[in-house]
Amino acid sequence: MSAIGHASGIEVPRTSDSGLKIVLWIIRMGPPLILLLLCLILTLLTPFFLTGDNLTNLLVQVAPLAAIAIGQLFVILVGGIDLSVGSLIALTTVTGSLAFQHLGGGFVTLVAMLLTGLLAGLINAVLYVKGRMPHSFIPTLAMLNAASGLALLLSDGRPTPGMPGIVTTIGGSDIAGIPVAIIVVAGLAGLAGMLARKLRWGRWIYLVGGDREAARRLGIPVDRVVMSVFLISGFCASVAGVITAGRTNAGFPTAGQLQELASISAVIIGGASFWGGRGTLTGAVVGAFIFGVINNGLNLLNVSVYWQLIAIGVIVVVAVELDVLRRQLEERFRTLQAHGS
Image 1 (cartoon, rainbow, N blue to C red):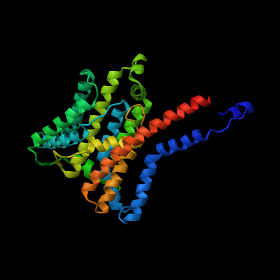
Image 2 (cartoon, rainbow, N blue to C red):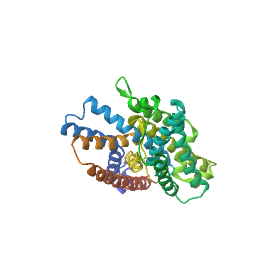
Image 3 (spheres, rainbow, N blue to C red):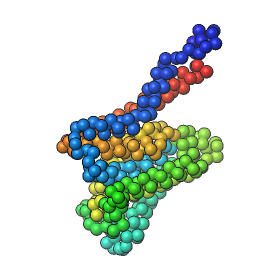
Image 4 (cartoon, one colour):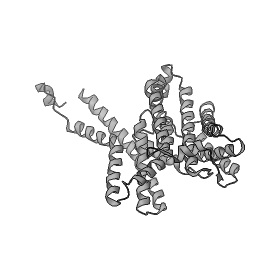
């Protein structure tokens, strides 16, 4: 409040304060606005974008990325990062194919695939928390290489054909024109959202991400909370692997390449912070759809796959810069509010 405002008893609006509010609102609403703008642009550029077949294809393509983005969000909320999710997709498809070949049965195969991600997530959690590693970057980078190498070793570097009906249904079928894969992801997002909102554990995740030491002083079991998010991330990666295997009816040791970067970018574009403590499931899923729409649009426009890789790199940088800008503006906004109070 200015000196004139104090003297007259009337608060004079601060233009910088209101301007920051507008800028922050634009940044926070950025993900859905960006997605809407991309859809409008592609609708104008190609008549095929809004066709039923293309929209169905888009949903199927986005489903694996949306699944791992959900898991990645929980890891980023506690200030971590999971680089292993892409290679876990590949390993899950391979273990599923081998389980089907040697054990048979759709249920057994599905359980084997889901356990693959859970076990890898548990290893990441134990290495990071119990091994007292300085950052989750290290164990998950190790898992990225280990899972990728194991997938290649088990498959002898070649696709391993064959998946049970339950897996191919999840990855390749639809219900009333809606892909089963996106229904599964919607269910996964709904379950994760319910756990995050309704359980005390969900509040703990945000508190741990905001300030771990303060969370410890409040009596929150920080180590168990941190370990739990890596289990969630591993499970979500295995769900993405099930969808991928169902689409291809095979195990692919090279599946999921660069999906770890795409999932991180999707979460950050969706409004989460690398510093932890902030982010929503809706934002993460919207971020995944932004990636999917960009890739789909570039394919429809016959743009080289090399340009698509360049686009991913640019999006990663933009996502991080938006997070930095959002953090700076919020700090500035809090400072202005403190001075005006």
